[in-house]
Length: 256
Image 1 (spheres, rainbow, N blue to C red):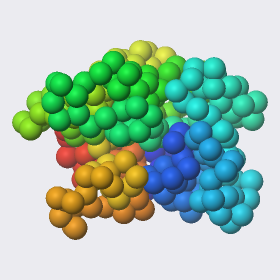
Image 2 (cartoon, one colour):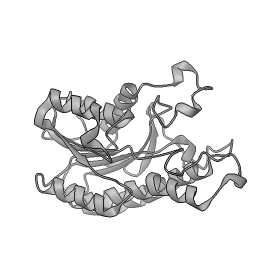
Image 3 (cartoon, rainbow, N blue to C red):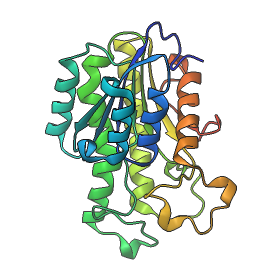
């Protein structure tokens, strides 16, 4: 199966949030494919990541590591300039950016636990960083085909929210869904072969989910490698006709 629908040539790919967890597993899966020419791995500490260093040793120049703090727009602009100096087009961009309980963000259980700093931290990483990444990469996505996929979360679904809690995380993911759905409409006008996807990877054994794994059945706690495989399967299955939609790891649509 082609990496993305109607891909004519080996792909140039960017993974943002690449130094650990699902992002690192995606880099490994992409580099193992014959239809991927180049993988750009961006994160705050990409050049210091032991996992990315091991992949660089194995795959050489096919992996390029770039330090980029996606919370800062100047850093995103610099990332776009660096890629543009080598390539005129990206076929696939995957954003794994997101936090739950770090950098001041919290998994709030009640209104009383809300504070402005926590809300701002959640939105900075979960909402603003991915859409500003897309903004700065837009010149590299104007040719055909091009897919921009971002990890969202089922808890960001308003229609599926029956338990409450996790105010800032839920809201920041819901806002991400709206921003990228809107962006998909603009991008379609610029490139009819473009696709923007929101993807729920399932509960994955990563640093983000570790404090909340106690009640997750073993068969529903995925390895990063399995989550990466599922993400790439959804990217391959959903093309321009599905742009602006929200899918779970198993190919089921997620309601807004």
